[in-house]
Image (cartoon, rainbow, N blue to C red; front, side, top):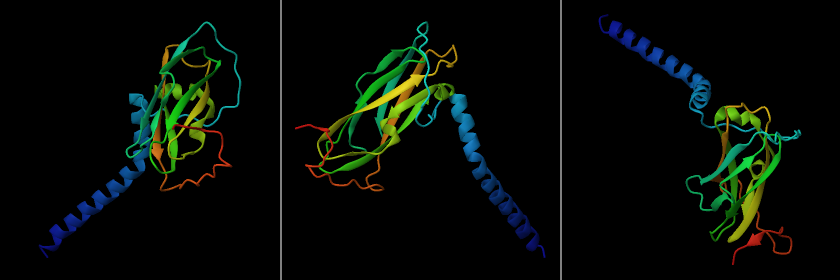
Length: 191
């Protein structure tokens, strides 16, 4: 009977730990969102914007562009300009370049992020290569436009935004279709 008391305590403690871990698993998403908001990271952008606004010529906001490759992504990827000065409400365009230096077709997906995160709701993309997967043949290079509007409602104390993309190789999940030269879309190839 003496051995069963320590065993019961151990079982209760282990059960408590299991319930605690299960509860913590449910809290991870809200904790992550709070941490991202507190530290101003991982500003999620919405889908395509279809509204229109007039430009606020009295105000200028600097938009910086960053591009990184996820681990294992071999493409060369980056913006044609590092930053733009924009007037809130005015439609803008920036182009990103992707080049596949490998000897095989690859499929990629770009994931955007805007910082500071509280400004993400005021950054509207009207066209973006991140809305679709990109397939490049070996040696192929393309320019991909991003058209956007910085909302006039952007808080007055925000003077600088950063739009960052991370490019992921998703070839194993979404194999590219071989492109026939006669039916290939007009994309540039580097020779």
